[in-house]
Length: 228
Ligand code: C5P
Picture 1 (cartoon, helix red, strand yellow):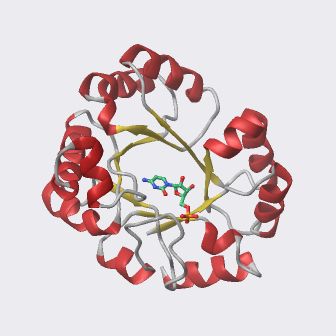
Picture 2 (cartoon, helix red, strand yellow):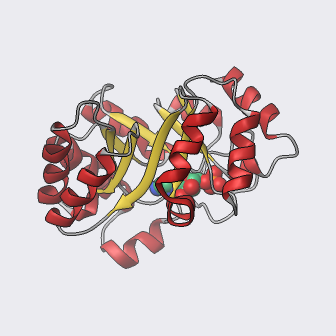
Picture 3 (spheres, helix red, strand yellow):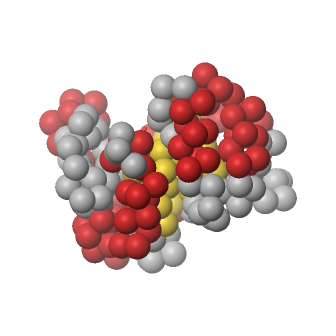
């Protein structure tokens, strides 16, 4: 299981200071999401790599559009040299397959993960949009993503184990909404601890606020790395 640190702080300077404090952690995954990327752009990715070229970059833009636009977008993403990206499973088969086809042409393609149900959804909120049960639909999204030859899905720990059982251990699961030692859940509804994530056979855990809002983020990262 690998830790992804979410860089969701209010400025590039604060995110870079956090990464500086974690400079010695070769191969640590860092997640650049919408907030950072909209504000700081591709230059920010270069600044992260300058701190430690061995950091692994997860560009979490959760693409959702028509197949051609998704394809054109990943052609651009391919030039950024990132290691993992996200697209929405609900963008559909044609869009997911288009993304996989386009990235086949890249020398070191990033892992492609499909977002199933956001972890901020509970059953009621999910039903309002999709008119179906959350768990069943997450599994359907995962099946479709596997058929389109994506590397895995983003889901909660509550669904990860079933996905592994049904689709095989090599189909990756990435689980956000981790509250490593039972911290406050904030807007997240389907939260889990490190123990839950291990039990759920999650391949990647994403941790944001419990790290960057801690008194000493480095200590929290080290505790998490020790546990996993
Ligand atoms: O602060 P917290 O640990 O809740 O941050 C979780 C991170 O994971 C955020 O950057 C959020 O955008 C992201 N994420 C999520 N749920 C998903 C996909 C990504 O919370 N399904």
